[in-house]
Length: 181
Image (cartoon, rainbow, N blue to C red; front, side, top):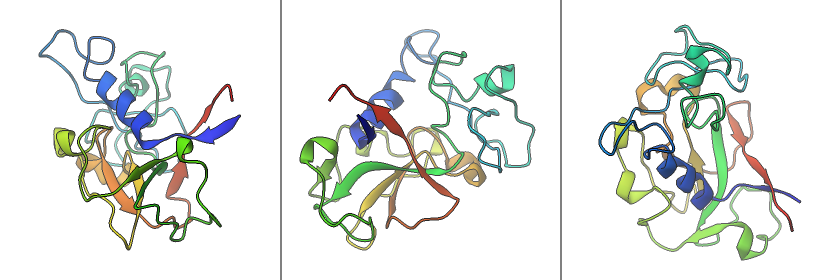
């Protein structure tokens, strides 16, 4: 079954980047995941963190491209910093808003947040890491966006989160996962 990734799943991968299984060489030396600064929204491109959209970038199998991998090698997860804003299944107070849903799916498919902060899921406790943007959803924009946009430069990153109202255009995307259900 194909489903959109949940907010806590994004958070789990974000945390792993800050471990020896991610981008850390030891318990205190970690590097930020590079940004996909490709303005044509081509997946798997990367450049050093904070790069501008017109800076040089490279495909996933080049040294520049591997900067955008969660593990800094070809086997990591790409496009978690920059590229397009990514909607994840996290919502404030079960607000449908402009999501296109007639009703919300079964609760096992999304994270519902009932307040304006949350510890866990790489939210409040990581707010501002690497200068990544951190804005919790509110009732006017109740869905979570992750990763940032290729033009966000220094505020884009795996710990970026922002509120979104589910608008549709080329700047927005989502990440799907395959489950065994």
